Structures are given as C-alpha cells and as structure tokens.
Image (cartoon, rainbow over all chains, first blue to last red):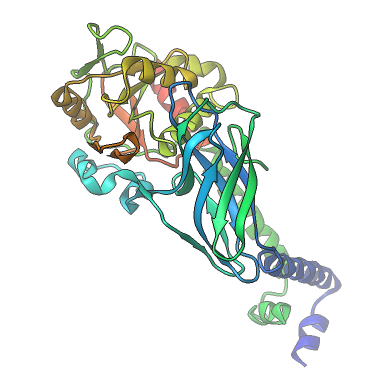
Length: 182
Length: 221
C-alpha cells in the first residue's frame, strides 16, 4: 500500500515530522471550510470615520454575510437627526490607479489620462451571494451619509437601517472611530 | 483525503522533507520580513517618475491669506506632502488623510513627523470656501496648509505640473455634483521635485517607510 510505504519507509524523526505536517495540513483544511458556509445572514462591523465640522458627507463601512440563501441590498436610511439621507455608493477607480506598480521611466503625461481618476457612483442594489461576504471598505462600496446634521465624533454610535429584498429592514449600530472594529 | 494527495505529490527522494519544509518556512519568513521591513532596506514602495515632475515654480494662494502665494517646495531638510481633493468626498479623501496622519504620528514616523509638512489643494473651490477647506484639513493636520483658488486656469496649471487631474460638474442640488480626481499623494523635496507619489490604498507603514528614506536623503543633501 502506498500509505504504508510512505509511513514505514521513513526514519523515526521523519515520521514525527510527517505526523506534525499531517496535523497542520488537516487543521488548515478544517479552518478553510469552516468559514463562510456556517455564517448566517447578517450585517456587522459597521463603522464611520469622525468628520470635520465643515464636512457635509460621511461614509459608513460594514460587512454583509449572505448566509445560506444570499440576498440583495436595495437601500439604506438614517435618522433625520444624523443626516438628510443615506445612499449606496461605490468608489470606482481604474485599474491603473490602484494597481500601478512602482516603476521608473514613466512619462508624467501617462498619469494625466482620465482613466486614472477615482469617482463615486450611486448604486441601486448590491447582490450578496449565498455563503458570500461583501465588505463595504474604503475605496469600494460605502453607505454615503448626505447632509450631516452634526459632525460625527469618535466613540459615537449611530443606527443605520439597510433594506434587503428577502430579509427586509435590518438595523445595524455604526461605531464612529478611526478604524474598522476588530 | 487531502493529506493523501499532499503527501502523494512529494517525490520519494524527499525523505527529509519536514526539514526542507522548515528551511522553506524560514526562507518565506525572511522574504516576508524583508518585504514589510522596507525602511531598513531602503526600498521605496511608492511611484518614482523619471524625470521627477518639477513643481517648485508653481504656486497657489493659501486659504488663510489668499494674497500670499504658496510655493510647492519643501523647506530645507523637510518634505512637503501635497494632496488634491475636496471636502464632500466621503470615502477616498478622508481615508487617505487619515492614513497619512497615522503614518506621520507616534505609531509611524514619530518625532521625524515634524519634518513633514502637509498641503491640500481643493479641486472644488465652489463648495470648499476658504473656511471649509481650512477646517477640513486642520481636523487631520492642525498645521497643514489649505490651498484654494477660484481661478480654474491657475488650479489646472498647478494640477498639471504634478500630473494630477480632476473634473467637477455641478448639478441642481449639492449632491448632484459629480467629481472625479486622481487620488495620489505627492512628496515634494526642497528642490521642488516630486520625489515619490503614492496611489490610493497605500498603507500607513508604507508611507512611513518611504518617508523615512526620503527624509534621510533630505538630511544628506
């Protein structure tokens, strides 16, 4: 048997090594399949940066797990005491802006094309596939708060409502801080 | 099953492969450390253009005193970081400025951060009044210089010197405004040359590591 040969042909020290490797590889396998499939549908880790007094907009970042059936995010709303509206947005930048490798010898005029620019577009829906996780992160999707009533202060908590096709309205607590909650 | 295929793929000659694994792991770790250690090795991770764009001859009015032109040139031994952005930008601009603040702060450059000056040019002067842009920048950098001009030809000329670009279209409501912009951070040296530029998504340790190298050069020149 191939198995037996692999095991028996090795000196004891190598056997210990093989045993350790087997356990490590096995654990990796378990860790690999453990995430995702068992995560239920939900919105979590919502945060926003503190804003300057003169700032009228803010971005909320969060994580959506599609759960076993997935769902579609169709909109968001926020209390009138926080902002005038909450919209789904996406920052779009060309590949050349975000993946440009460090290099010399590039002509400055190459950097001047419209393709290198970042812009924001409104999004009407975001599909979250079954078993998938969609992260709203800087430089990608965000919920944009338009017409802030007061600046957002570090440590403050906001309540944001997200609308989904199947799961209906889901409220999530948004923590104001300089980084995503751990 | 998975273990079987993993082992089966190994050649019978690799009897001591757990040891090999250790060697490989050590090598991998060394490469990884070299990669994140950047500062020690002296490798710049940002973009260096050849020839470096010269911006020292360009100036823009400061928001604080519009009659005083601000030249894009670092003082001796310092670096000047320049960013073209706007305050109604909820995502890219605050992310960049916040990451820069981290890079210049106690967990980044520490004391060396005093040798880095920050200037932000608004590309949306219609909505970013002098008060708005100053307040915005000072939230991130209390000593930062806010730059603003209502003269689009002047703004365009400054942006072009850096290789920056922007487009702003105004709608009926404030939120209808559509803004596109290049999202680079530029490091200008005391000769008025753009030594390095970083694209959006650069992490604070990368900024800090590159800035350390640039500051060493600035001190030596």
